[in-house]
Length: 244
Image (cartoon, rainbow, N blue to C red):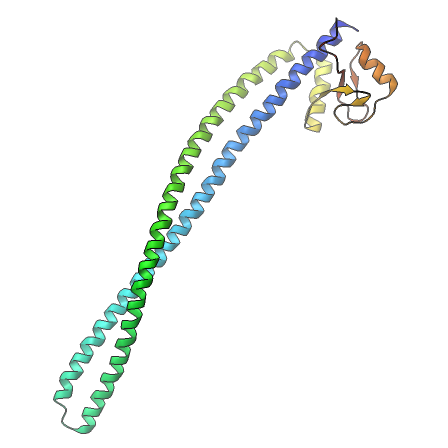
């Protein structure tokens, strides 16, 4: 065993721990804006539904108002016809005025029925809208609180990651350049650890068996040994507790 190789492996393990934590922090940094965006989309969707309900009520009120105008017109026409009925000179004229009056009375009755039903419907719509508006406002306040908390977390994660990235750069200066190159290449290619322990006679990264010769080389720690299957750097499981 050479102390240089041992120190290189220990340094790479420390770098691995930093990289694991950096990966976690970078993931959190990605998740915070994503969560904010998702919740913002949900809020805007709810806002859109609320606006649609508001527009439906406004349209319904316009229709109700138009029917109230029509009712007034029918009432005025009926009143006018009743005056004309008094002055009718012939039976034929009298019957014609009566027929017009009956037709208008029917239309007037239909409109009155519609208005009464519409008023009940409008009352239900407005109550439902008020409930939806209250729920939306509560949801909006929750989103504002969540957004503030996530933005605070993001700032903390970015600050912590910045400190750790500087710590990583400092550690890199003390590592063997060739070993570091292999470590970084494998870590980026496989998306995980660039250095793993030998568990029994198995690679702790890809879980493939290693040869007897490679196992002896790993335990001896006279050189940097790579797994022939995944190319990760291998180290003995008792590395940190082994005497120098």
